[in-house]
Image (cartoon, rainbow, N blue to C red; front, top):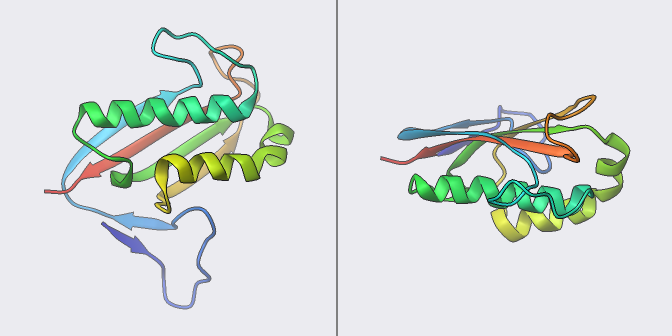
Length: 130
């Protein structure tokens, strides 16, 4: 896996502008902050983010992938003020599960999510090296 940073560009904080990788591709559908039985334990963004990230990691593990194999992640959030207020805590959760691995990421704020009381949904693409 190669992090792509064009010459002269300032390094991004908390994500990569691009990643190049070769291997087996694993696509993970959007994961919300519910458990394996599709039950939310909180309506707050922080525990939902933690659970959604754990869900992605569990799906990747089923394919033999690790969090470090994630090349791209998209986050959909329907509560921008809550997200902005929680960024420090969300960063701690990220580092707990992902360490210092930062894939190419996009954050999209949306009006609502399908699954209530979902506040954030994460989808990922990973590449397991050959």
